[in-house]
Amino acid sequence: MVVHAADARPRHVSRFLSRDLEQIFLALADPARLATVRLLRKKPLRSSEVASALSLSRPLMSRHLRVLRRAGLVEETSEDDDARVRIYGLRPDAFAELRSWLDDVEAFWGDQLHAFKLHAERKHGKRAARAPKPRG
Image (cartoon, rainbow, N blue to C red; front, top):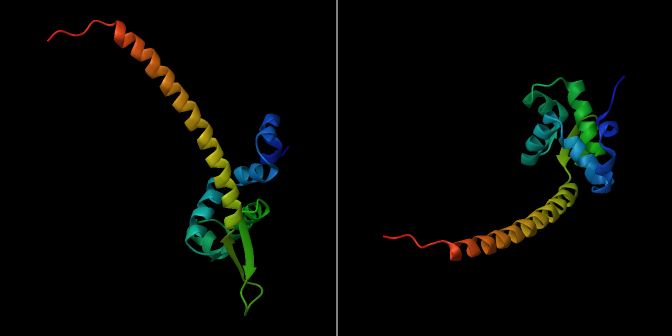
């Protein structure tokens, strides 16, 4: 029995992520696909160039690129003089959505940590006031 990553996800995850973000995270969870994104950050490349750089077979690279394309992270174009040659590049709008979500998460944890800091300082301040002053 084959279980796909999308089928293996916990049911409660969907409550917190949009379907698009869920697909982005699933696509980026694979080390080869994450390495592909790192390569494509520099410039658009042919699938054979990506496969060669990552020491992957062309059919395997094709499958990874298909997952990235379906998640909306990568777009495929062809060269003007040869429609058979496919060039893959990143889609900035997908990463903007991811960045927005990360900013929300960061803001939430920043607020939580700030509240904890204030609580700790108030509690520590009360203890410091009760503690005897060191001699010396």
